[in-house]
Length: 198
Image (cartoon, rainbow, N blue to C red; front, side, top):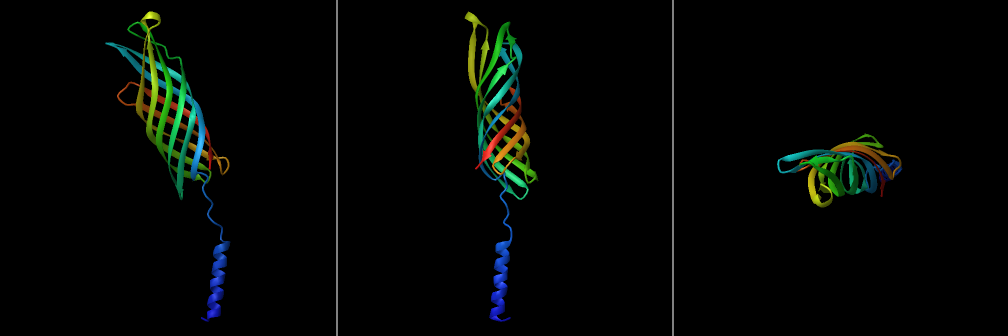
């Protein structure tokens, strides 16, 4: 093959490579920040000596999250941090004849997400991580009132769907279960969120 023919073929190859469409970045790749809201059902047991009381508390959840993720063909892997709070209601009970109330304050969480791209715009994912929530328990009223506060650590498992509305706007819906270790606190969460990807 002559040098001229080789140069022509090489030029054609370069043009073909340059003209080939580049692979578009997944809308789930990169860093993002978002906000969430939702519903929580907390089941807790309070005790005073041999007396115990079960408290079932509903809550409105709200907070913010930030994370980073990367797709590998159809697979997704990412990490996420969050901070939030909850407004509990319907949580009255009695311990040893005294009225008992449960309140939730700040909550922090770290988790990893792994998922699969059902379509280019829809991610199905699972979640596993750690969560810490500060709870107040108030027993009694007036002069017999006793209040205790503690940070509870627990593991969090969940999953959900995330949809790319645009290349930068992501919406999600998910379920989470939180089990606070060495306590009688269990939490079920239903959440929705919206995030902006950078």
